[in-house]
Structure formats: C-alpha cells, structure tokens
Image 1: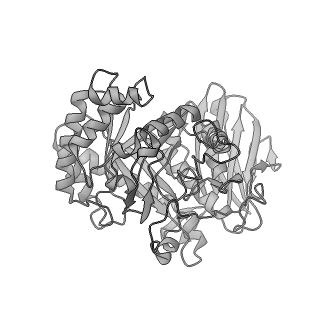
Image 2: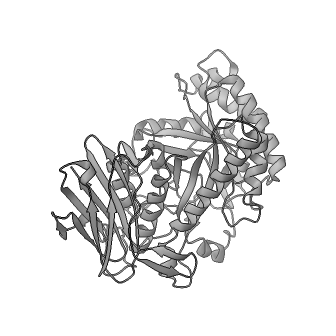
Image 3: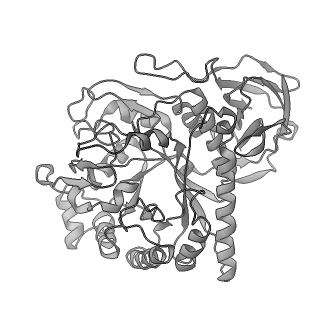
Length: 496
C-alpha cells in the first residue's frame, strides 16, 4: 500500500471557484445536435423539439456555459441559414465533418435551449470563410434590443428580448491546416483584432476569446500565441487552449498522468501571454479559456476516415468511455481547478453523443457515460475558493511525462465546508491518504465517495447505465483523518 499526505489550509487560496470552469460544448457535428439535444419525434420531446431527458441530464451534470456552434463547423457556417421559418432554411454541405447541415437548429433555437437548461450561451463567429462584417451582423441580430433591420428580424422570428450573449470566440483553431480558412498567426491576429475592435464598438463590455493553439504539440505552439496576442492584447480577454488525450499502445500509466501535459500547456501559455504584456507595457492580464478539452480517441476517427457521402447527423466520434477514461478525465478537471487564477473559463467537448458524458439512442434511451460523474460531482461540490494542495506523494515513472506523483488533488473551501477532489493514478495499488485539516478547526469527513472498479476498462451502456457510478467509500478513519483511495480511482471527500 502507498502512503500520501496533504494539508488543507484556507490561507492557501488560489482564486475563487469559477463557475465557467464547468462549461461544455455543442457543435453541429455528428449526433450532438440532431438526436442529441434536438429530436422532435422523441417521446420526451417538448414543444420546441428538445429532448427533455437530455435537458434533465444537462442540469444534473451542472453545466454553466455552452460553446456553440463549433468547433471546426463554425469556420464554414453561415449563421443566417439557421434563422426564420424552419421549412425555408437551406441545406448546406459541411466541409468540416463531410456532412449535410439541415439548419433546423440555429442561434434562436440554441439560445432557447440554453434558457431551458439554465446555462449561459457562448457564441463563436466564423473567421474562416467569413469575417468582420458577418460577425457584426450576428452580434447585432443577437444582442441589440430592436429598431434595426437585424434586431427587428430577431423579434419577428419570435425572440422579442435580446439574447444578451456575453462571451464570444473569435473563430476556432485557426492555427490548424485542417481548418477551413486556415491562416498564419499574423493573418489571424490582424483579422481577430479588427473584428474585436468593431464588436466593441457595439458593446464595449463583451468578453472576447482569441484562438490559441489547438494543441501543445503543434509546431507553431508558443510562437502562435505570441504573434496573435501582439495583435490583439488590448482587445481580447482570453486566449484559448484545446487539448485531447487518449491511451496509446496500452500505456495506462502515462494516460492516467495526462494532466501533466495540460499543466505544461497552461503554464506555457500564461508565460507567453505575460511576456507579451510586459513587452507592451500593459498591466492587463490575459486569462485562458480552455474551451475544448476531453479524453478523445482521435486515432479511431482518423483510421475510419470521412463519410463517403454527405449524410445528415451521422454517428461520428462516439467514444464509449470506461473507468480509466473517467479517472484521467477527473485528473484534467483537477488541473483546471488548480489553475483557476488564470483558467477562468473552460468547455468540455462535447455535451451529447460526440465524445460526450451523455449518450442517446435515436428515439430511445439516454444515459450517463463514466466521465459524467467526475464533472457532475465537481460542479456540484466545488464552491467558494480553490485551495492549492501540494501532496507528499510517492511518484512513478511514465514513458510520456517522466516522473509523476501517484496522487493528484485539489480542494475548494467555503463557509459550508471543504471538498477535496483526488485521483489515485496507481494502476494496481491502493493509496492511504492522510489529511492534515488542523487549519480548518474541528472538521471531520462527512462524506467520501469513490469512482472505481476492478476492471479499469468497464463502462456504462444503455442496458447497464449504472455499471460505473460513484459509491460510498467505507475506508475512512476519523483520527487522524485518513481515506483509502483504490487504484485507478476518482475520489471526492467532503469535510465539515
């Protein structure tokens, strides 16, 4: 058995818990929209065609924001296609995912869905095949109260009140050669700056996100951020990060330590942004919107290739997650929380069916994937301030990241209590964790749950939706405070 210990102290404050950390992502990709959030013929469909079972699970997941409509999709999107009478909307070829887009769901429907789900909409504009003028048109349509052609068109389309979308992404992954309208950093930076400046002429209080690197492994990583921010620094609030992880060649140990790469990504982007700010003699700090992150077995998608025709809502990127995926996922979420001083928004990609915590059958059932549970628990229990914890933990050697601690953890603290989120990365050995909570006064462990299973590759399905689910951890000692963390496990320990 391994031994580890950590200290909980409210003086070790990192930043307030950012509710936007618990954002997700809905893209017109595969079955995320159609037969995901929207399926008019489904038994649970409401008057707008939205699946009530998915709405219920979205609320249970604890989602705060939803980024829309992409993703790669946005770089070829004409937002006007998705407004007005549905029967008159054009069908278009979507080059990003080699599909046909029916435009049955557009900006008005999406915002209506957000209101029902109780989430904040986050909109991306097309800076791939389109540009400044189209972004201004969409902003005026969405946010201006009335009295102009576009705002009155929104009212005529049934949305009397402005959508009041506050957070806007200036394009998507423009560093990627796969992106429709791919640009160099200077080309994109100039376009993003021009667009941001004009959007602020309509509303100076918008929160704007410039595209950062789509992966820390991109050959332009670092120089991309520097050149983009040299053009946009005083005009944007965030630089984006995107990262996906998968187990490769049976290397479970490295996979469970994927958050080490995310930590490197965050610290590198922060250093680059602050360096640009220093050169510009600015006191402003650029924060990070980590608006795409997840476990994604991208190699399976690459091996499968694009569809041979142009189907509507084909099943794409429908990874079925197991326990090890959920534990790795939990480690990524811990890293986002640990960096809440600079990562002030994030979007899990995606919400339904497409590499998602929620899965559905067309016309049938919906269920929680294994990754649903760490997200839902963290969203529910993270409150107050994030506390930095530096565990005294055994380490292990990984092929991908070198020496990594077995224990990965973060805590949050509020007047109602303190919650510790912890992952045991050991593939075969329990870890006994001793918690020094003297600085919190006479607290005790009031609840401890663990997500684990003897089979690390076991998952959930429509027929067995509760195969992997959090269960009470009975291995708790009161004095000293000690919890036994099973191998390959995500753990939530609440103290009060």
